[in-house]
Image 1 (tube, rainbow, N blue to C red):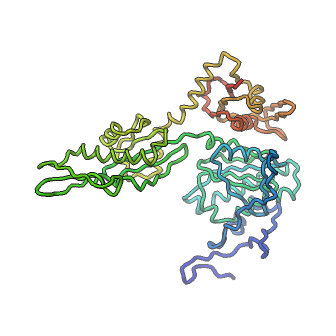
Image 2: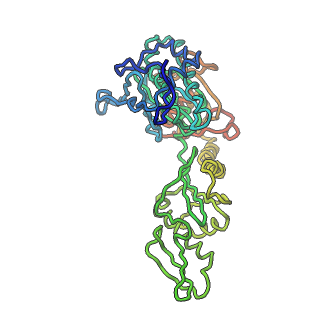
Image 3: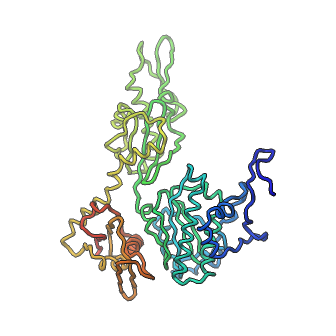
Length: 474
C-alpha cells in the first residue's frame, strides 16, 4: 500500500489517484460515458479527478495559438484558437472588443457553462465548485447527445473541461464566478467578479447573456477614507473595490505637521518625506498651532496628492469616508469638483474592505442607475415617434441590422426562437424547441456589437409593460 502523510520537511503527500497522462505527456482518453459516470459517483470524482500532488506544474496546460490559426490579413475571419486535448486558455473579458471576439466565434456545437464559485470558506475545502462543474458537464453531455452529436465529438468538446476538473490549484483559487466555453478545438474559461446563475447552454454560438453586466457596467468611483493617522484610497466598481497604492500620500498629520521647540518658542513644520518637499517653519509665539488649521494643512496635502496621482485624470465620483469634521473640511478645500454629496460618517480606518465596499456600494446605488434612468426618460420623450418600439418582432431584426441605439430589457424574461438575418425570417416559440436560441440574448449581443447601449431593469423600472423596449437610430 502506498504511504501517505508528511515527509521529514513537513510536507503532506496525498495518496496518488489515477495518472493524469499515459507517461508520454498526452492526456488520458476518457470517454463521454465517464463524464456521465462522474456525475453519478462523487467519490470517484474526488479520488480520481481532484487530488493531485501540491507541487504539480499546472502552467504546462497553457494554450498557445498556432501560427496557422491566424487568418490572412483583411480576410474578415475571426481567429479560432485550436486547443490540444486537456488544455484550456484563460481569457479576460474586460472590454467590448473582448466580448465581441467571443460572441463572433462560430462552431457547430458551442457549450457555455456558468457557475457561481467561492474564493474561500468551507466550499473550497469540500471542493463544492468542482462538483457543481462536474454536474454541469454531465448536463452538457446529455444535451449534446440529444442534439445527435456523435460520441467522439462530444469527447473532444468536453475533454479540456474534464482535465480542468483534475486541477486542484485551479479550484482553490477562484473568484465569485466561472464561465467556460467549449467547442471542438476551442476551450476557454474566464473567472468572473460576480456570481452568475448556474446555467448550461448548447447551441451554434456561445451564450453571452450572463457576461453582459460586466461589459455594460462602465461606472467606477473612488472611496477616500480619511483619518488623522492616514488617508486610504480605494477604486471601486459595480462588483468590488481594491486599495490604490499611492507612495506619495502623506502618512497622517504627523507626516505633514511637525512640532518642535526652539528658543522657548513653539514651532510647527509643514512638509515631509511624504507628499511635501522640504520644510517650512512657522513661529506661533507661546501658543500651539490651531488644530483646525493643522488639519486643513494635512488635508490640503492629501488633496494635492490625489489630484496629481489620480483625480487630475478622472471625472468619476469620489465618496468620502471618515469622522464628520474631517470629511467636511476636505469637502470645503478639495479642488476636485465631483465629490459625492453624501459621505460615510464614522471611523472606517480599520474596517474590513469587503464590509466597507458593501456600505459604499449601497450609498452609490443612484450613481449606477443614472444611465438607465436617462435611457427610460429618453424612451418616454420619444414614445410618440417611430423611434421607439416594444414589439419583439421589430426589435430582434433591428438589433441584427444595427438600428437599435438603446435596448431596455426586463430582468427574468426569456424568449426562444430563431432569426435568419439573410432572409429576415423570424420564428418565435412559447417554449424552447430544438435549434432555438434565446432571442433576448441575441438582441442584447447584437446591440452591444453595433455600439448600442443595453440596460437590464427590474420589471417596475421598465418604461412600458413589455419584455423589451428599444430606441432606434433611424
